[in-house]
Image (cartoon, rainbow, N blue to C red; front, side, top):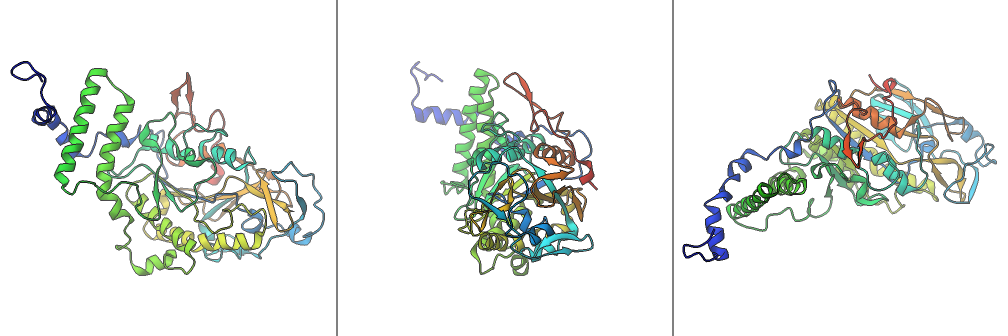
Length: 466
């Protein structure tokens, strides 16, 4: 690149000559849609039943005693001293037996017990596979969130969504494989719950906001698209030159892939997040016009989740909107806080299940509902419930899970799982299995170990599967 007289060229001359040389090399690559870095390792160990996951994450620990796990004994002994030994809880103000704050009824042909707090979801009872015997290892939010998301109770491991994105990639070239739809509440533990950690950067969760621009700085700064394209091409050319000098470098590869994906997302994201193509009737079904703002927010999230899996995104996680009750963490004023939280999610989730089914997507989409733990069957402070990881409820729908099925049981007070307990590692193993992945065989070499989502644990729960 020296001048004719042997001098170093000016920056302008360098750019002009580079453009006519190696900087033009990536043009065909860009037009072709990328180098496949976002497509993942393409791990498939057997024929999958599902292609994607929508995780309806109920941050804070929803109370199964008031929603899905009906216990007549809690009703009969409400207000009486709790008769079983109590495990240490997060707070000391543990009180008497606390009955459900709403009535229960058996719903659908399957007879699932569902509370009156979820009237719309009750209409979808025959699509649900309800696990009433979940157990977890932690009773504090941050550790429990890391455990639920990553299979490890401490910060620093890849999340379930990141493992799935790493293994399967994305069917769309213009969207990430793993998307987090942030309703306003990032869980304790922060965005490390969605992190890729030691996995390739393309598997990390991309957070989309529900207010303002969905993705920060996604709008092009250049008014001239060709000018922006030339900048991107030149940046890639410099990366390619560094790669030729230094050899393969994951950080450079990730930067190249991210820049190109961001370029393609500039067209895809505005189209995705605009609901103009959805009928007013469908938006109303999801609650996008509801008088309660959290319902509107969560309804839009559920509708966007359907649009994302339609386009080939593998893992979509929804976080809750702010109902001003500290998430689902009702240590006090349980009746009011739980009612508002249920009002937020009931209509949108019921619409999501019905819409996915109507479009033929439910069979290939796993819908997962739940939080990091459950609540105690005895009161805290008279009108709340403390944290309980010893027996709680989660449910799945679609994706080859048994519809209208109830699995496991807690004791007569709903305190501890006593029939067919399901661990978080079991849950992860079973979801991976439905996606065509053997959890024991999808590993990643890091720090001298072959690491996996389920560590050295986990059993596929075949009784949950159709």
